[in-house]
Structures are given as structure tokens and as C-alpha cells.
Image (cartoon, rainbow, N blue to C red; front, top):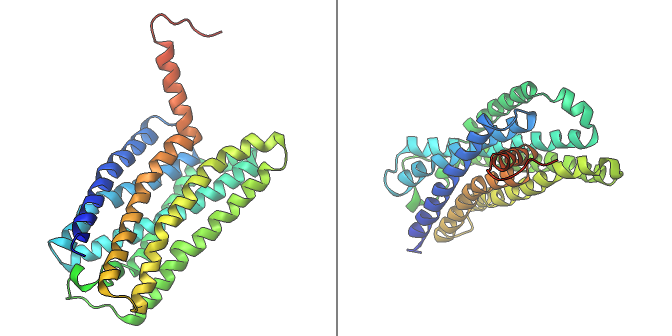
Length: 288
């Protein structure tokens, strides 16, 4: 498929041009304008992870198409794994926090402080780094020969173990631990009208973030298992790896839209900004 490199380059270019400004904008608003809460701490850390991931797109393109060197391949693979694990773990934290907000709002607002959220976020980064160091050579070492250098060979048994750990810790377990609190939020929303507003607002962001993350990262894990089975042709594997890579980058571009359009803190920021603009507008009288 001779069109594949050009197709891959164009899509990566669009994702880079969209993802870097969007995630930078989320970081700017979260750091300077939005009230600091436990929720904003989660979104700030996820935006940092998405920004690092999208900023490193040129690194991946450079070593795949131009400079096929092992250090660039390892660095890109480590960043990919770090982003995947950190995003999954932070998504679990968001789901559990929103479950507490829906079921026990007073207790959650008192106990789930921004300071506690910062410590939990630091723990997720440390845990993600530990898992990433075990998978620092997997992604590119399993790519088809035309897309990578032949100077590095990965041990098959080590690859199988790392792929299994990566699938369980970076996909299956986070999926379960994200869906269970979401179902609890849905159950809370059905308890009565007095809790309906408190429960449905956290549910909106979860219904946007959870399906998007796991749908976009599912081909990543499927590609690994197909590569280990060695039953596909190199051309087909090249297409599959490119598709999985693009989807993982697309997820980093979609997250800012969910933050800005569904999250309460960001919506309150937009409301305050609009009210200031309306109040300062000449010719308008203040509302009663």
C-alpha cells in the first residue's frame, strides 16, 4: 500500500495541529481561570498527558520515516505507554470521584479536596511510569520490518508477558473500575428527584470520556495480540498499526471538547465570562 505513509503523515499532521492547541487551551483555563477543585486536578493532569502525547507526534514520525534509531523508538514507545496508563488511571479516579459526588455529595465535597487529588494524581503518574518502563520497547519493536530498524529484537516470552500486563492494567481493569462507578451514578439518578440533578451532571462527562477512551485504545491492544499471533501479512499489520496509532492520537484531541462542553467547572467559567461581558456591555441594564 504505497499511499499508507502519506495517509498516515497527513492524519498525524491534522491531529498534531488540533491536539496541541486544544490541550494547551484546557491547561491555560484550568490553571488560571477555573476554580481549583478535585475535578479540575484530574482534568489538568489528563490534559498534561494528552499534550505530551500529541507534542511527541513529530518524534514518532521522524524515527518511523526518516531516522530509524533505537533511542527515538524507545522514547516514543515509553511516552505512548505512559500516556495510556496515566489516562486510564486518571479516568478511574474521575469515575470513582463522580460516584461519590452523586451518592454522597456533602461527604465528597468535604473529603475529596484538591490537595488529596494532587497526591492521588502523583501516585497515578508514578504507577504509570512503572508500567511504562516494562513496555518501553514493545510498540515499535513489534512493527513491521519496513517501518522500523532491524537492530533491535524483543524476546517473544517477554513480549507476551508485557502485552498481557499492558492489556490488563491499561485497558481491562481500568474499564471495569470505570464502568462500575458509572453504573452506581446511574442507579443514584434513579433514586429520586432530590438527587437527580446531583447525579446526572457527573454522568454527562463520564458518558463522554469512558466510551471514547476505550474505543480509541481497543485497536492498540488488538494490534499487539495480532502481532504476537503472526498470522497476518506485513502489509495488513502495517495498516492495523497505523490505524491503532491514529485512533490513540484522536482520543487526545477529543478529550478537550468533553472538558469544555460537559464539565461543571468549565461551564461555570463560561457562564461567568459571559455574564461579565453582558454586564460591561454599554446600553444594557443590570438584571433584577
